[in-house]
Image 1 (cartoon, one colour):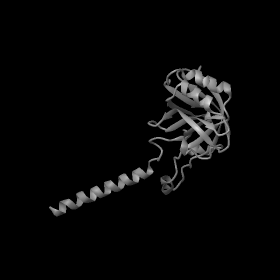
Image 2: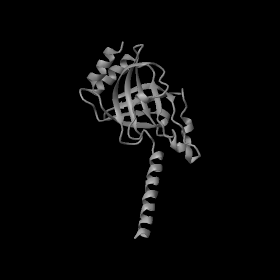
Image 3: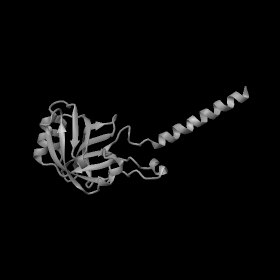
Image 4: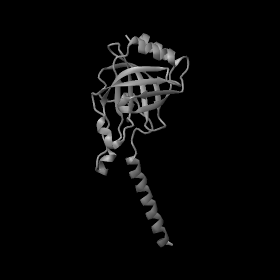
Length: 195
């Protein structure tokens, strides 16, 4: 009977070790991201509201409207840009890209912005040991100061309840889709209080 228990104990030990190493290989932000973990945001933030998020799909994403201490409004997107690993070197820090934010169904509710990658998650390294530390970290993208027209469009298009989708399209020829979680009154209040 004791001989039968040894293989069972050994299998349990192997299974436990396998689960442990698989958990290390899983990207740490996959269950959700928070813009407050964003790196290198080029201004101090006094307040924010979450506009949209994708905490269940891939890539995870957080999209916020933030107010700087100087009274300027910006969108901040924290996500791993869906660029294939073999060409992630195209994602450059401080590179300004034209992007479009689509709010709700269709393409008529669009806000065009200039966005800059201010922090980039590490690229996949050749060594498997490097995969466990920082690879698949999210990228941080910040828009230029939003104009009153861009804020007014966003306010109008969110209506009185969150619409289904918010997509950021065009950053390095990618698209990030999220679920809206705010409404026009929250955006209006942010605009009015951001001084």
